[in-house]
Length: 155
Image (cartoon, rainbow, N blue to C red; front, side):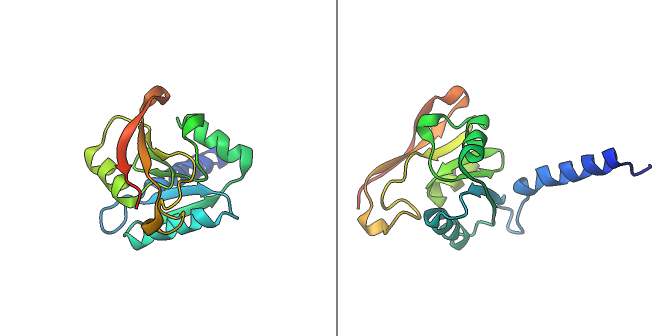
């Protein structure tokens, strides 16, 4: 086969598309996170996931581009937060606890993914869990319909 520019670009695009879906040595899929490079709570959430055994890759994205990515991947405007993750075909929007991501990957519902809209105090990366306010994690279905996936009581 002759390596034309078109073939080389197609190979590179295929490889790049597979990176966020890569599986770690432990069998857990990696999570790829798009975030604002200046956001401390995004970085804190990523570190919590890493401490919980997730392999996390990150990509900086800002403003309109990040919002377009969210909307193009099925996150409704009322479910947005500050960062967006992708894992094994699911979108993870905002400060979703690691346990909820693991449950999603085990149960494998037909859905876009999970979201914690806004930035509830005490959710992972948003302050101490011991002072947490109550919040819900939503399962986002195709078409934007959302339902409560889990509820986290106030501390």
